[in-house]
Image (cartoon, rainbow, N blue to C red; front, side):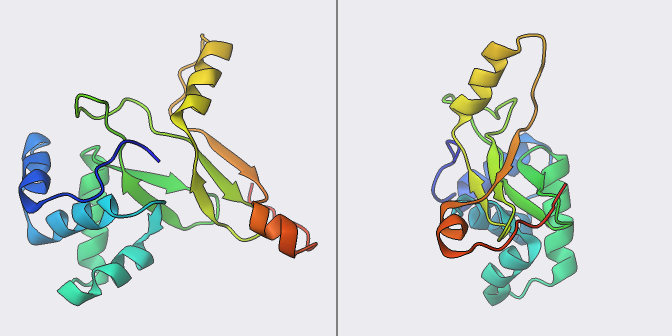
Length: 157
């Protein structure tokens, strides 16, 4: 995955929100902290489940994710299955937000989304210097599905 910290302290999340002009609310702070703990992009339902202990309803989580996405702190990934997944935007070594986000692989059989190395997008940049690539999604069959099933892949195009 990118160079996200493993867990934001409340002060770090507050500073990040302030830096993009968003009010520091408990819901937004908890969303940032939740996303910082994830290894892969999560659906709104998964995030809601993780934050259920705090009593946030679905609309609060949806509005918070929308605000964080609009502010550029969170990336919304469309895997082609009509379920958005969210994760923190990658950071540069100096802590600034990255212009690009790392690529992802999506299994056509089970729908699992995996994070790929940013070097893959960098290789694409070198191979096609006249293109500016904003996101890259590779579709295929994951190792687990390949070894456990001979069922045909679902079409997610």
